[in-house]
Image (tube, rainbow, N blue to C red):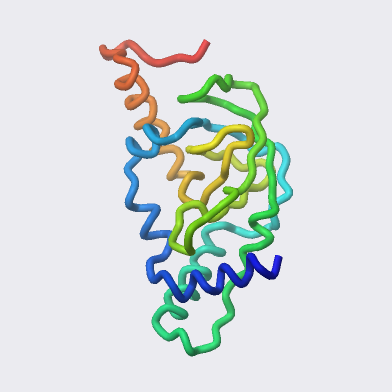
Length: 182
């Protein structure tokens, strides 16, 4: 575990961008096309620590920016190691990609690698009862990367766009035609 923590610290010094900037670089259409799995689901089980991801990453990003601006200053960087150890079970409500059907449960885990602290593959913790929209580049388990999970109003807006995008990808046209999973 100490090697992973040392890796985080070294990446802090080597990279100046923060993950929130990286998350904004991918459009919904790009995420859809690159993902192997795209699902709307409820979290039914979780071993992630009880942290709010938005608050955690706001503090994390501020610490990364401060450390990048002044590498000699001592800063308290929030610990990511617990986030890499969490797992979850998701109950699928809707699926836009893969053979996962509504009602099925799928296993989820944090990404198994990351390149830097500006990498969108940093983990996104989820908790029991949350409704999440997940774009995963991996299957079995799907990966819960920081930029790959949308919640709340962010998910609501993306769901309408995903329905239209999925219909377009499949060549479904017309105002009354919609993509429905069997």
